[in-house]
Length: 114
Image (cartoon, rainbow, N blue to C red; front, side, top):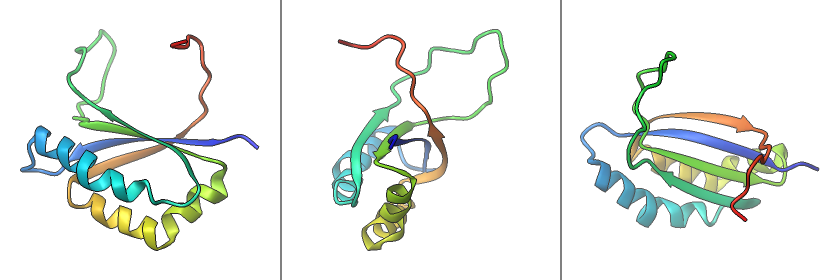
């Protein structure tokens, strides 16, 4: 069975500094996520800057972070967030996130770090 990988684009809550957003995400939210059942991997990608716009159209959306979840399957991903710990994680997200876009993706490695 192929793993389910979700990438979520995050926008910080209005009035929250970028530094406070990152600190909360690491120090408060991450320990809750670690408790999710069925989770194989959880990676936070903290946006430190943008490379700039290219010649093609790009949506004018500010992204402060990207989170990557990996679960064994779709059933496990659904169960992780529908249980009591998952509900707590989603409720806590409202403390520092104003908007998010969840994408289910298939990864095709082309060049690897190793």
